[in-house]
Length: 389
Image (cartoon, rainbow, N blue to C red; front, side):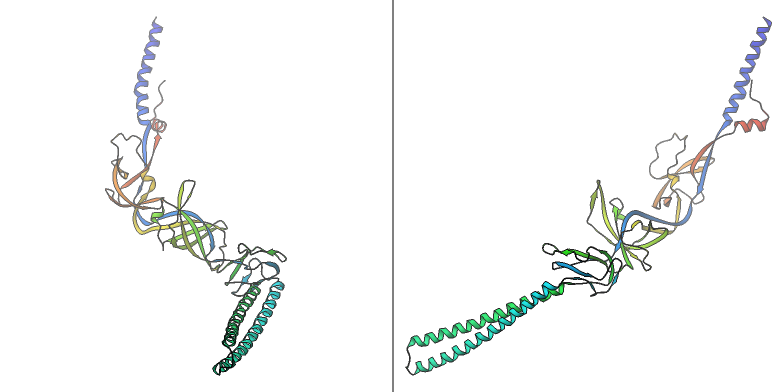
């Protein structure tokens, strides 16, 4: 009986010790620590990102206006050409024959004109004689009328012959022009980007002009046509700076200037975008037509702006139970606890946000995160305490 009473007293003592020391241990075991930063002045840029394709500013499709067989090709891919340079030849045999035929027709028309003029001269002389005889009452009126009719017909014959001459001259000019079209020449100075024909291939220009070559006029001046989302297009203006990278040179950063913001929108997968054209200098010809460009358009920049990290606006104290906060708020550490401060914001580059006004001071410590440290074991070790039985 005495033994049972002793065990009960020991258990009661253990419960009391656990209640006292255990509660004290857990009260001191968890403590919030805050990660803070200070507002700082820095250069900041607001930007819009997009992707586009690098292309030559002026690209010319060279075709043919006559049908025929390609007889010669004088250039290939990447050939540098000059304006007026012969780059291909269509077999001219048929067109040369047409020119000779047109020349013969012109000669025949001129001969017919000379004949018509001779007939007119003869009719004129006969009419003059008939008038003289009529004045002397030596012929009948019908003879004079007949001479007049012959003269009028001769005049008409000359006009018809002259018209035939003009017509055959036009036919000759067309034949000579078609013959000239068999010589395919470069319309600009540039580089051949593509060649669509081979020697012996027949090209037909009956319905539309076939493309034989594509020539980029000047690859030292390129452009990027990119599409900007409708949510960002309001901040994009002509003359703004842009930077971009291409997959071929991942470590190189290229720059350009916005030349045009087009108003013709396009819709793809329910997303409205607007074309933006960026001029790019390419003196060393590193950029090539067709490359994909990852573009960053700098819409606004400030050199000495008061900024805070973007993460400051995402922070909320875990133990905050106050009223709902409105507007832009950052939390400042005061007296060991976070206190909300309303601020006015400006531009952002994604990592930092400009502060344009509000309750924030440059000396404030801005909370961007918190963590819980469990220090019970170290506290007990330093105080020499043992856990209760």
